[in-house]
Length: 195
Image 1 (tube, rainbow, N blue to C red):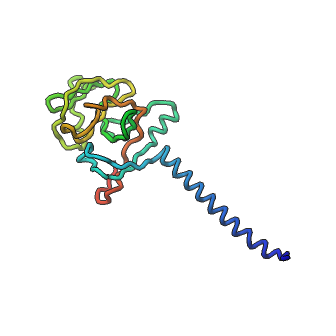
Image 2: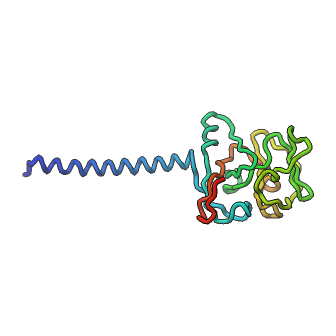
């Protein structure tokens, strides 16, 4: 029987190294899960509803920091006009659209134009004029007031059947369904861009 203290001491460092390895992996996996749940989330674009800004297959990073912050304060997160947001509608897969109308505003789509009416602009204004979005005819016909804690969203592909959004099937979206806003396009690498 071997009672050599040196041989017993040699097994302890190996066991400790393995334990450190396991702890490091557990910490890394936990950090990755928490990061995706509360801070940043990957998202891939499917379809043409956000063309020409985003293309089918683009790989994006969505920031959940603001929505998480408001959630922790038990408040409703309201993205800004022009933000590109990812949403979890109750009756459809996750979607990505641009915020056009805010709570209390009236949105009118007619004769190929979209106008937003609010206290600051009682005569209405074209929200796309201030955004770096190519001008195009807006399909559809709707007049609606955006309810409290809701947003009016439109895909940048505003042609007929180009996007399922607040002009048609989707209606206004509760702000609680907003997952986060676009901050970075990772792929394709030639189109790397921050938003």
